[in-house]
Image (cartoon, rainbow, N blue to C red; front, side, top):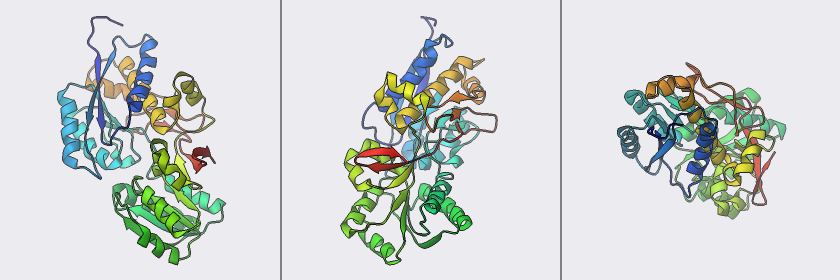
Length: 347
């Protein structure tokens, strides 16, 4: 590494409040791993911008935050994390010709310059949950979903899967993604006598769903999308999730994650730390492989990363991109888990 070389500036676009420095800690571990290999001729500098994105904030703040990072001279942007905001950022990445990697759940967030590390999947989680319902003999579903691009994406994918598998939907209701009281809605859904309640959304409203279900004394099985990853950040929400099966992106059989745990239990403890570590390695690999250390050169190098073992997903999940393939994770990256006794247990 050249001591006199300027560091590579990596932008971080946070569109959701950060409770701690976990993401930057884990991202740095991934970058440092590549730097330690001696293949990068300079270090890395992280430039962060915190904005209030959708659904509680605005499109304007996301646009302003991305522009600020572009003007700061970053070579690549990491973020946003919410599909609503990644849909806003993708055309900006194309306009400014800045490679970016969002870590949301929506495949529609990908573009020529916007890459995607899948922390969940709006399109692939619902079929997985529908198959799980069939396995458990649950055939009559009540569906509750966020009134947002995230919620609607999940609901549409579930509709296609449940028709194929012969699952009945007794009721389907959209709620605000910021809902705090859904007691009346849940009482209406209960009247349809479903044998499973399905929640799809960003996750903020999942707390209201859990509290309303407890207040009603409704002992119905619950399946949910990756929104229940909120339990990692909010331990006080876990009791409300007790017994809920949901989709996660961390598995107990992943050797890359096990090795990461030896370096940092914090980073390996949940999906966000594993994702940040993986994204750090992807960015590091791109910088190390870039034939021309420019934004275009890094974008081209990202497309040439192949078969990198991932810390997310079941063992054997790999990472890489291609010319028209801007989805990072390949293989069994979705994992069924259940909150039980305050812990996330692999199903």
